[in-house]
Length: 367
Image: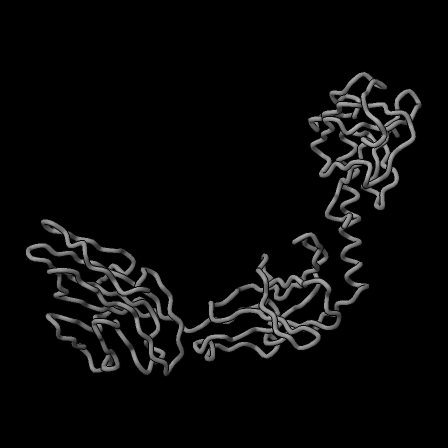
């Protein structure tokens, strides 16, 4: 006999039944994990409504070789199993189908068909699920690798160093997760997964010392999955001020490249027509421009450049003493020179040095 294990069947005659529901958790394609010797319950029970009643239910099993068989029936309130090898099956109308003392032969695909009648109407519905043994995470070399990532992430106004664990070739079943042990012995959950790694974002101030990650077997069903000893605990990765500064230096180095590229598009730094002065970082300061060999400041009236993340007044970088050359500057970001932006006639303004523009091209790195 051939069974349609992966098709939801709905057949209605006359007016279809519609009030019944399945027990919570009865979903098509669900996967259950268990070990030999365990008991497992599939929540395959129909809750009828009004005049509805379940007249017939049949359960089928297909093994990993594709062989199918009927394993149990429920007809007019009577539950029976057709073969002595399935005497470990039990059914309760408010619980579902239970298989006790699982054997190796019980793992495969299960299917249920239910007939629901209401007067002269009836429906047939079907569900399927999989019963599997837990599958552990795997790496190509059966080793768990912990390391510090070369980049940091910016969260809540601060930069955070990240640790990565894994290089997993397979994540395994949901019965496993990756946890971290801090230098003081605290256990932390991974924050997220990225590509083939579990990621831990370190909070500031960072606890210096050695960190390691390990496979956490947090469900009873995972106990029968073999995890190689070298996969249980990783190497230690040392985190200190020196290693943290190395990561941040890499960020600043890349940021400087991005800043120069961004500013060159609008300010043409290479032509020595724009400079940032009195800042505490190379990417921030009071904006000064050169026109006809004369340096001067820019007024903040209407000032806007799409490639500049933040614009500040003189309180950040002080008042200038040079002539005010530009006022009412508005750039779209497509200009090749700040003087290509819309602005008043050079040298004409209604500003004082209290309105000198300051810019911060990477505010996240200026804190």
